[in-house]
Image 1 (cartoon, rainbow, N blue to C red):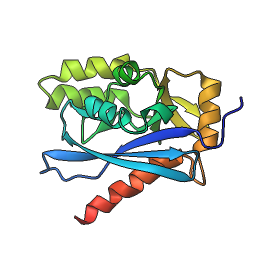
Image 2 (tube, one colour):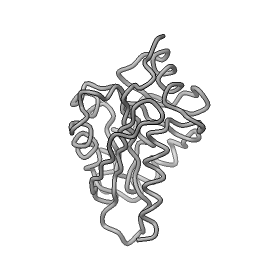
Image 3 (cartoon, helix red, strand yellow):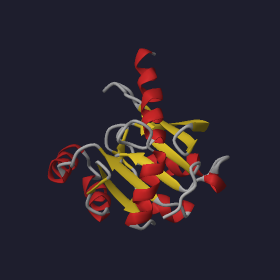
Length: 182
């Protein structure tokens, strides 16, 4: 599969936060290929809320929308248990969504935590259960929609630099760590 070196992708991660914080910060890094950063975006979300999906869509629908070929998410939860609905993100943007996970998550532990700590746990559990099971691909676990596996494999290879994850996610993560000192 032939993919141009400067394929446009965006990586979304959240900044670390304290238990006392009511909000968390989403960071989106738009990058061409694995070297050219063309945009960094920030949105506030409610800690443990249900607004990460709409905020991710707002980031993606911004200035670089027409150039984004894939949306990479660092996991499916942001700001605690603010679950991003990957189906809705894909539906609203028309862009493939790829969730990158470092290690296989324990879905049952997540479900138990949602039951225990959230009045709207059944809604969150329903969203979580609707997602495809993570697959091991190119050294990472991924969940993906709107893209074929071989095309995804090629995009991951083009967008990595020295890390096992796409550079757009690595940069978003590094920027997020900068918020620790505030």
